[in-house]
Structures are given as structure tokens and as C-alpha cells.
Length: 499
Image (cartoon, rainbow, N blue to C red; front, side, top):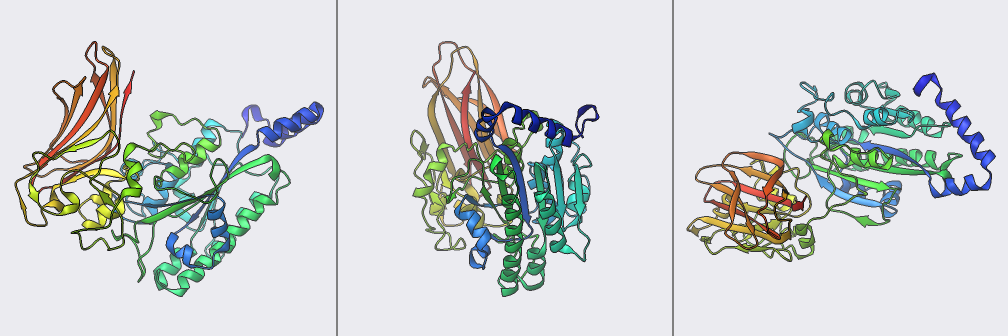
């Protein structure tokens, strides 16, 4: 509803009358500022690599004309690869440790603290029209709140056909919605019944591809489409195993993706830094809803990428040397640091597994495939390429001495006498004897310890205030990991911000 009981239709009619009165200048203004709108399409249990194998011309056209980003999710104990946690993460823009959905029962959910993105739109811009329709009822019954203008759970007999027809009718209507969420379920059904390696799974992707085409065509058929900028986001909540099923920690079960067109997306582009919570953040940003840091969102808009120094290493990543379970063709590690960074291995033991001898730079696929089910899958807040010191994997081959390696940052500018903020993402699992130390050196002086890790710190974004000494111009960070056959430490997105 709009303020003071004025209908949305009346507001739009008034705006149209003003535009006519203004004449040609109004047309120029409309062309310069097309109305932003968002369509999020969720394809339950769909694997991107099987989309590429399937007869799916509409999805492939969206990929050719926009952004494609394969991504991965968590596994237990963070959360199982199930629909409840998956859709909650996509729709709220935060990971399961915040929204607290750990299964399909939604027990203990924190949607009041971390609401869905349509509710945030309604709160920030109540004049906008929001609509959600799903084949899996808990999405519209539980995840989306009553603040959403329209929530529809399609009756079982109608299934994806009914979901699609309802969404198409809404998208074709005038003035129509500003933000739409649609969930289609049949690919997941085929995965459970026949498995992801089956022809039936490919046939289900072909069917949902046709329905995606109907949704996109409905946008194009709108009389006002030339004056609208639709950001279309297509995603999935989890993957499937070849035999069928999900909930576990295999790489296939942990797969998701984002296909995006419209907005600022670049045709044919591929990204490696996109994560599930980015869907909600991208929808909000496209509609001009300012993202308040107090919301604690884990997502960031795809229109605002923020690559760090480690991400530049992706072209240098190599295939396995000693690790035998990752897959011979999987690229994903290097010991060569990015420009300005260095690694001090002067106290590092000898031998061990080559890939993890001292600080390494790696990816989620490479690192988690090295050893499943040891909470590596919980490293959800790192993106793209990250740094890891992994004493556990290093000691899987004959070695001498202990793991003692230090990752050293560039010297960043700071203002003497003014506080600065050191930010980074960390994922640390502890087993004695082991320690992680964060040290800072000012203007090349002896490093000072500012943080010590000696207990589990899972997937956390850290913000440390640095008391910069007077007269100082630079600060350099060291991450020192010491241990043996213990656990590991992940570091990513390191930055010092001077006040």
C-alpha cells in the first residue's frame, strides 16, 4: 500500500499525466533513467554443468547475453545441502549461521532479524509492488513475510505449470510488479527420481528452460518494456548427485550458480567471486535500496565487485602434484603470492604434501576436494582465490619439522596517530599444538601481535582497530601459522582502511 491510502494506480496515472504535460523533455528523461525492475528465477536442484549439456536454448541465451557464475555452498555441520537452508540463504542474503535455517522444518529461523529481500524492498520503498510464487510451498509460506504484496504457493496438481502461468500473468499486467520471485521445482523432482546423470534430468531442464523463456518473453511483451531495466537473476539452491539426491558434502551436491542479464551485466562474462547471498543484495541494489551495514548482509551486489589481490592469481593456478583425490584436471593452487605480498618459509619444515607446504593460494573446489567433511566446506565467506595454511593436509606425506609459515602483506598507507581498520575473512579450525597470529609492523619496525587464534573461528569477517603510532606512514600485516598434524587457517579479503 502507498501512504495516506492513495492507490498505486492513482500515483502512476498522475505521473503519466505530468509526463504528457511536460512534452518531449519527459521522454528524454525517461530514456535516460529507465525504471529498474527485478525478476529472480529459482530452479530447484539444477546443476549448471547439466544445463550446458541439455537442450536449453533460453538459459544459454541468457548466459550469452549476460553474466554466468558457478558457485558452491556449505555442507554439514554448517548446514546440509537442502532446500530450506539454500532458499533461505538466497532470499535473505545471509548464510545459515545467521538466518539459522538448518533443515526443511525452519526450526529456530531468524527471519525477523534477517528478512527476505522483498520485505526489505517493501520496508524501504513501500510504493513498489512485490510478488512471489513458488511450487515448493515453504518458500512463500515461511521465508517470504506477510509484508510482500502477493505470495502464492501453487497447488500441487498445477505444479510448475501453474507457477509459470501465474508469474507470466503478473509480469504481463499493467502497471505490473517491480520485484518478482519465481521458484520452479521439477528439475529437483527429476534429480530425486532419476539422478542428475539421467536423460530425464536433462529433459526436466529442457522443460524448465521453456518456462524460463515464457517468463522472459512476458517481460519483453510489456507495453512499457522500453522504459524498464529488468535485472533477471537465475539461480539454484543446491545440486544433485549422479544417482540422485542431495544433503551431503559431495562437490555436485554443493553446486549452485547465478545467471544474470540486464542492469550492468556484461554479455558473455564469467565470474568466480559470486556467492549465494549476492542474489538478494543485487536485487536490492538494482532497485535503489541502500544496503545498511547494520543489516549484516553477507551478499554484495554483482554490480559492485570487489576483487582482492589473491583473486589475480587465478590464471596462475596449477593442477595437483601430490594430492590424488582432487582430480587430475582440476586447477587450484599456487605458492606464488600476488604482487606486493610474500611468504616467509624460513622456519618451515621439510617434505610433506607439495600443495600445502607453507601458505598456499587455492580455491574452494581444490581445497575441499583435498579432504571432505572436515569443515573446509564451511569456509563460505572467502571468495574466488584465498590463502590457506593447512598443517593437516601437509602432514599426509612424509615430513620433517613443524609447519611454521608467515604470509606477509604489502605496506599499506596509514595516518600516524589516527586509528585504522584491519579487515579480513578468516576460517580457522584449532587443534593443539597450533596457533594463528596476526601481527602488524609500522614503518618496518618489529611486528606487534594484534590478534591470536587458539580456538575455532569459523567463517568470520574480522574488523580489528589498529592504534597507529604517531608519525607512522605505513602498516604491514603478517599472518603466522604454527602447528603440525593439526588443522588449518584460511585468510581472504585483507585490507587496511585508514581513518
